[in-house]
Image (cartoon, rainbow, N blue to C red):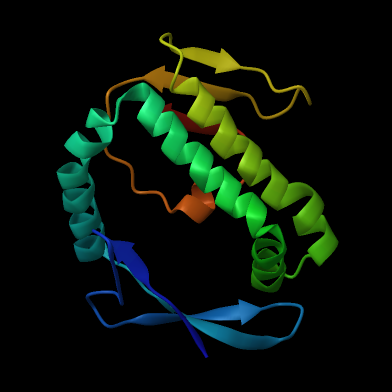
Length: 163
């Protein structure tokens, strides 16, 4: 059975409490994974790791942060099939829908915010579809308790802070 662990400070680890959640595949009607059931202690560790990494992230400069996020987008695009299959299994939607909508939207979001890093002003952006506007507030860096997987999902209306 697959285990989904926390990734904190460059290390994969179970929740500090030792608790697990079942990852249920609705289309299959069965549990396919154990997911770390993270609690406040895990969040505090993640925040401390993010604060420790913050100066190095800022030191990359805008272009370096842009390049890093664009590399992530390229890797997600390279592995589109695997991400789509995982998304499908996780929530029961057809694989083709995840391949045509969800994962491409995640890639587009990564590229959007990578490019937004290069611009100086804070702004709201209206996507071509006319739905789900995105806002970007210019700051050096701050705290965020969001999983990349969730950050990349098109969750309307989304408020995202750009570093």
